[in-house]
Image 1: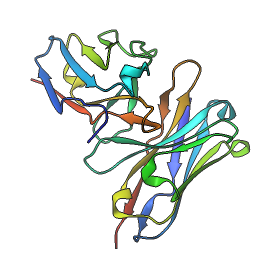
Image 2: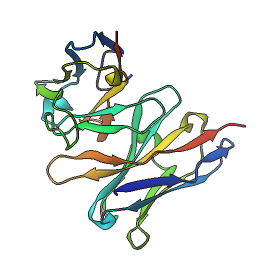
Image 3: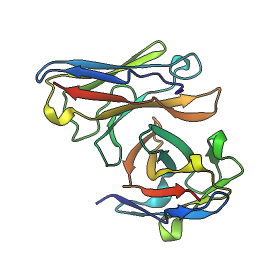
Length: 111
Length: 120
C-alpha cells in the first residue's frame, strides 16, 4: 500500500486530455513537500517528467503539466498521443516515515 | 553526455550478499547527492537510500536499514550499494539516480538498472 495514492489506470482517446491524481496526506504533500512526476516506458528506466509540482525539464513537451493543491497533486496530459501510453509515478517526501515515497503508479492507455 | 551505468546484479541465495556499483560520467559527480531506487517485478518504484555529496549524510528506507549500505567514491565517480542478508523480497531492478538538491529534491538522471534476484 503506497503512501501516495494513484489510480491504477486511466485512459483517453488520441487528442484528448487526461489527468492523473496523486493523493497524499498531512505528512507528505499536505505538509508542503513538493511533488515530482516520472514517466516509465516498458522495460526502461524512469524519466523525469515534472519537478517541483509544475516545472518541466527541458525536452519535455508542454502537453505535460503538473499542479498541487492541499494534500493532492495532478499530472495533466493534453493532446494525447499513442507514445504517451505507459506508466506514470508521482513522488514526494513523507515526514512521518522520514522517507522519499512514490505513488503506486498509473498505467495510461491511449484508446 | 550525462550517464549513469549500474553493474553488479545477479542471482544470489537468501541470506547472501551482493555489491552494486554505479559509474557516473558527463557531470561532476562530487557535486551531487545520489540515490538508489528499486522496482520489484511487476511492481512500482521504491526509494532505497540517499547519500550526500561528501557521504556525511545517509538515509535508508526502513526495510533495508541494517542490511544495506550506501557509499560513494568521488575520486572514481562511483556510487555503491552493499546488499547483505538478502531476502526474496529484495528481488528487483536497482536503479541509481542523480538527486538534484538546488531547491527541489528530485531524481533527474537515471541509470538503466541492474537486476538482483534472490532465490534458492
